[in-house]
Amino acid sequence: MVMSTFKQYSKPDTYAEDEPRSGGEAPLWGEAVYADKGLFLLLLYDKAIKSMTEALELIAKGDMVEKGERLIRAQDIVLQLSDALDPSTGAIADNLERLYLYIYRRLIRGNIRLDTEAIVEARSLMMELLESWQAIILGRDSATAPGLENRAMG
Image (cartoon, rainbow, N blue to C red; front, side, top):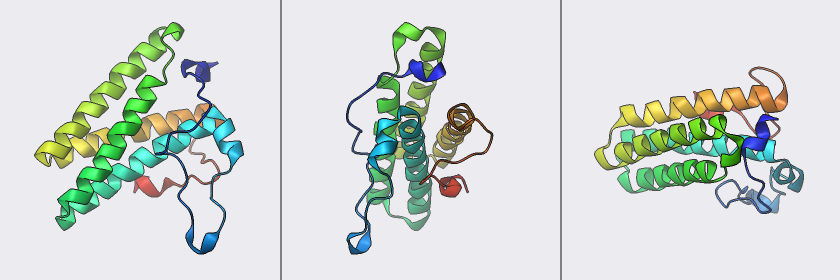
């Protein structure tokens, strides 16, 4: 199965963890999501795309400090995705690793040079990958997992 392209980790990365909701409500994402590496993968993609979208909005507002934090978060997620690949699966993992590293370099360029085109390109590539993984993991096109919305894709 394609999901075997990724190694299994016992604990989720902090970037995909759900932040506490206001009023002490329960987190949106439960343990079941973290136990399913397919849904966890979708959450990582969603968080990276959302961070890139927020960075573009922050650039437009002139908030360079927060822009940098959002892009660093996206860079960290992309590196985590690259690190999670299982090289023993062959060409799929090799190609994904090259693509992740390209996306990572585009995010660095966007952060250092305020290159919005590089950020938009990185986000577009991540959105295409997310759509592909959604089709594989959820078994249908343009599907979303519980807790995932296409909010970052607008």
